[in-house]
Image 1 (cartoon, rainbow, N blue to C red):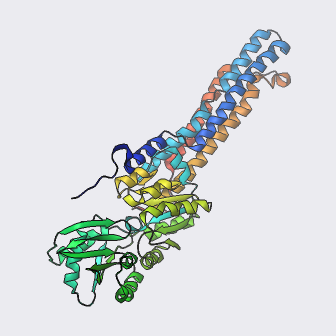
Image 2: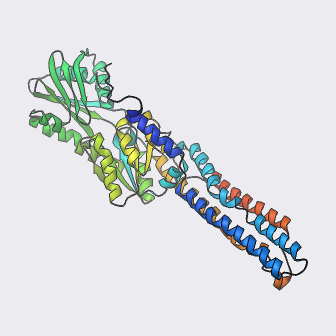
Length: 442
């Protein structure tokens, strides 16, 4: 195992991601900050009302003025206690996050819970997200002058140095064929393109057609077969030996059994679904057709995935990125909400605000439905708490006394204040009975 560290300690990408996550964990959701702003105005306003009440009763009230002044002022302060206002947001978020965990959705903070319900576009990585992430070799096509076994041996030898899922599929297939895998020298992985090295003393390249052509290799004899395989949803890996096209190895990664149904749910929720992958364009289109996805970005380099997210955001979309690999981490961090598959890499999970533990795309629709329910619940709590105080304060100040001679007893005001908090908590706990529509049992 050969490893070169180009950044260490706090300079690494992972360290930056961890720092971003810590910062996010300390942040409040926007709707929580709204409650804080309301409270910052509400509390001084109540104190002013209490002072005005005291002055009014002391100067214009009946005898004993001091007694009436004390009772009404105290009642105003008791009934206006902003407990319900303070509980409205955190209690709903706490219940909502706990409910999400029951469905295998781990939400990092309240902001992610709120934001996921506002998404207009969901961008899906292909390998391991829409597909199973367990590819298998489906075809080996040798060019003139090469045998299938010869092609497969050098390809497997090269891919032995790679950690890519497609490389593992080739190695597994080579072992199943009983082939001896030779060691690789001078191995180098070119992100988003392929790999190169020396196997049995011969220079070998394996990867995308465009990259091999950039290295001056004529891949024309393989084009027709590659397009045929790609149209079937298979990924053609072009192989060159000593500067000459040697053939291609086709690898297929099937859809997850529930991907199409989950994507249909997302479209029913009014979201636009986009497939984002570095795979061959024809392969990506074939997979998208099977999954029910209309918009596809294919042959995108890992470093450019975040740029695609930024492009969609510039069009006014609220974007959720769903991925599972190290190369998805920048896009997950750039998106309005990053959703990582729990079956993916630690870096992807650390970059995301939401983790789908089950590895099913149904978790996205479940998270969106739960977010929308939680936000409705919070708005109900805030509205109820605000209306309660708006109606209660004038009664506590004695606005009905000139008409009916009635004053609100401070003990009743305390009970009413406690009842408002109880109402907010009870309303938030209704989320415990929430069930996402069309929930998959997977």
